[in-house]
Amino acid sequence: MLRLSFLVLASAFAFTSHVQALEASAANKKSIESGLMQNAETANAFTELEYQLVEASGLLSLSQQIKNSAQRLIAGSIEKPAAVSINHAQHFAIAKSLAKRWTEEEWQQRLLVLIHDMPVATQRSIQQQLLHPMIKAAQRKERVAISVQSDPAYQLYMNKLRQRPPAASRWKLVENLDKQSGFSQIIIQARSVVINDIQQQVKGWQPEGAWEKQARQDVLEFLFYAYRKTPNTELKQIADSFKQPELSQFYKDVLNTVK
Image (cartoon, rainbow, N blue to C red; front, side, top):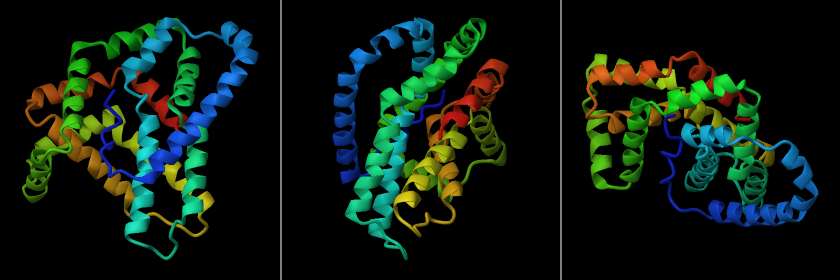
C-alpha cells in the first residue's frame, strides 16, 4: 500500500506532546485492565498471517497521519486566525479525543478485526498481492521520498513541478495510480476525521474551503516525486496491480473503517 505517513514532516507543535502524554495515560489504564481481558483476548487471538497483513499493508502509519493532520490544522488556525480560533483548552480537548481513538495500538486492533472477518483464502491472496516485487518496490520508492522531504532538493523539485507541469499523459498515469490505490481518498478521510473532531470541540470553526482539493494535490505531488524516475509502462503496471479484486476491496473496506 502507498505509505500514509508522507506528511509526517509538519512543523513541531505542542499537539504531539499532548497526544503522547494522553496515550501514555491510556496505556497505563490498559495495562491495569489487561489481566481482566486476558482470557477474552486469548479466545479471540489473531493469527500470525493477520498481523503480517497489517504490517505489509503500510496502514499502521495512518494513526500518525491523523495526529499530523490535527497538528497542521491547529497550527494553521493559530498562524492565520480565522473568525473562530482554537484556544489552549480546546487544543487539549482535541488531543484527548484523538488520543482516545487513534493510538497505533487501537488502530491496529481495528485493522486486525477487519482482516479477521475475511476468509483465510482471501487473507492469503491479499498477502501474496502485497508481497509482489512490484508493490514492494513501489513502497521502497515512497519510503525514500518520505525520508528526503526536508531536503532542499525535494522542495526545489516541487517548485519546478508547479512551474512546469508534466505532460498530460504522465499526469494521467499518476492520477490513475492514486485512483487505483485509493491513497488520496484515505488521506482525505483521515483529515475529515480530524476536522469533525475539531468542530465538536470548537463551535463555529471551519477549515479552509478547498482543503480536500489541497489534500489531493499534496498526494499527487508526492507521487510525482516518488516515481519521478519510473517509466510510464512500469507506473501503469503498479497502478494495475491495485485493481486485483481482493486488494481493491480490502482498501475500500479500510476507507470505511477510518471514522
